Length: 107
Image (cartoon, rainbow, N blue to C red; front, side):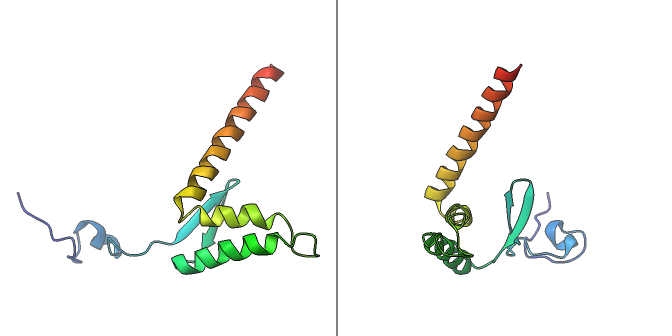
């Protein structure tokens, strides 16, 4: 059986045939409410954006800024931090169970 070199970029060699590196940074996309939103590739930039949104969200009583920025910042931070990811997953499961219960009660 012939061994293949993962760094071989010649035609017909797995990932190299598509022209991308196997370990290349892929675009970071976040799915929310059926839409995909592009996020910065840099973890530092995503973290700064998430924390910034959460901090500015605490000033929600001011015009333009709003309390809606807090959950948005937590959603962005959930891409990199397990604690936010677990919280987001719990909310998604709770929301799905709630919707299915309401659908059953209507029928």
